[in-house]
Length: 80
Image (cartoon, rainbow, N blue to C red; front, side, top):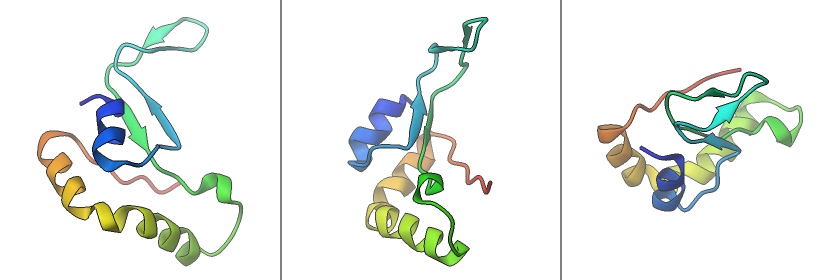
């Protein structure tokens, strides 16, 4: 699924995205798959609970849409 379609369905702009076939790096390697991600990294330091609350405030109202997306796309959670 295209990252742009995820944005359109959720009505949320990602903090990072790229499409399958987009190139990156000096070698202009193509990404094999699209990525759509949402992060609080730019919000600065703070307690984990504050970051989780900010993320949940944005995605919890979209729960039904996320559940539909999970049926047709890979949905991963990454903690970094």
